[in-house]
Amino acid sequence: MSKLCNSEDFTTVFNFRKRLSSPHIYFHYSPNSKSYPRLGFVISTKIEKLSVRRNYMRRLLREILKQELSLETSLDIVVRVHKTFSKKNLNQINIEIKNLIKGLPS
Figure 1 (cartoon, helix red, strand yellow):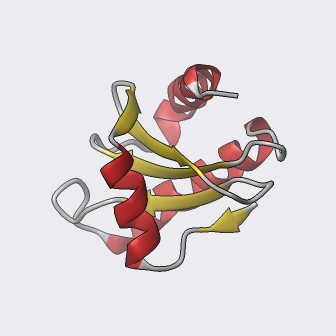
Figure 2: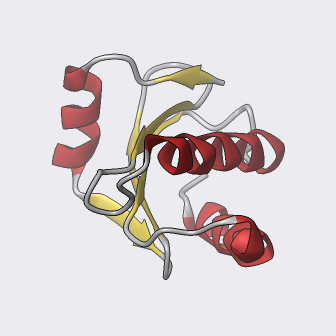
Figure 3: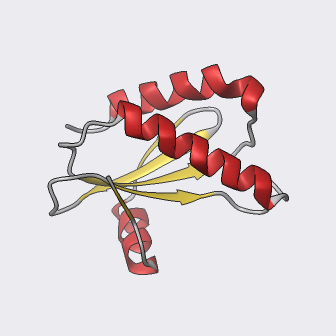
């Protein structure tokens, strides 16, 4: 699993205009020419002011996606948080991500 590194990669995904949503998270996705998925995360300061909490959310999402996402998936995925969450919402976030992954094209 790799990262989306530059703004061109993020722009390409956002311009593809495919999105899945849940109460806390949006998945923006587009196909890529690689044989593995690439991930990017967007958590704005409007959603969560403290960088410690934003980084926690990013780490949590990355770990869940490592466990749940197939390595044969050739998609670029930008995970955008639109509602803050914490440890007490962990089970709900895990369920939301599993449902969003089911909605991704194979």
